[in-house]
Figure 1 (cartoon, rainbow, N blue to C red):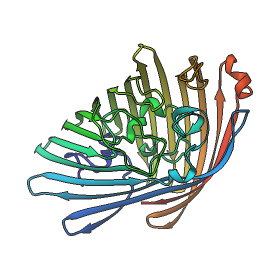
Figure 2: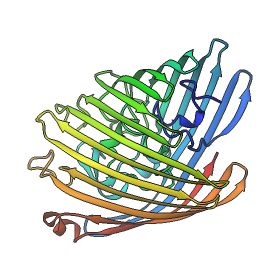
Figure 3: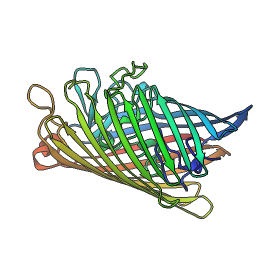
Figure 4: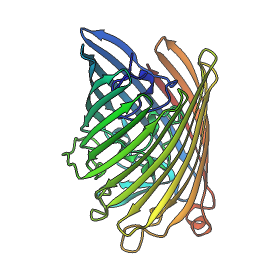
Length: 388
């Protein structure tokens, strides 16, 4: 089948309207009901997390996603696609799970969440798209979501082949893809063969601390993204966003954001693949204060049973030590590296059960060493159920 938004391979479609390499996996169980093609997919993790040092903690939690889509193709070459994605993340509680050097959002609407990864919303995506093919190589499309993902950044980390097998969220999340859950998104785009340009209007405010509800939409921010897949193994993008008051605790502070990324995926053997992502992001506030982030992640699956993955990140952040009277504090440069492995057992054709683990090490500058006890490490053990 072709993609939901145009005449390219379905495997090019990623989260929201983002692209990945054409040779990527397209997981899911497909069925036909009348004129509709139905796809379902699930990935659920049970994780035990231990982060060391004075600011670390231990916790066992459930994470993952449940996805479904319904697509109808019409005789005139147009396509209607409905998508839903839900997450069990709210079950871990408002304060999420321990993750050293992570920051952003709030657990209770009052205090910033630091050294912890926030849970995602129950409703991660409820969207509809409509595309119209203009020629064998051209299409235009519209996408709306409540919630949905605007045209900014690479595919969200849980959808990237280089990251999806790790239960650990990247600390670069709020630079690269924190807009993947936005309550109010509209996107218009045009694609020609391997090139695409698109623009979004969306709600700038990130979801509040109530992870179970659907929030009122508002279109007060905008973004634009150009994407290019020069070969079936590559996906490139550059994007810009003007975001109105994204943080609940700083409602008068707007942001501008830049992102650029390159994804490379290579297939080999019957089931083997190797996928890597290099991404850069920049955030700037109303006072022209900016900070950058870099991420390099890779995953190798030599066969149907084993997956090896790793990530290295570097960020400039002013959120690890709150400023006097609240708000952001001093700017520090910190880094994190993680490596992990996953072994899967195939229970049925579309069902896998996996057991995995990862180890991470964190690097902090001298002024932060007393708070973190030097350069603390951490580890996760997890079991996974994957359908599709």
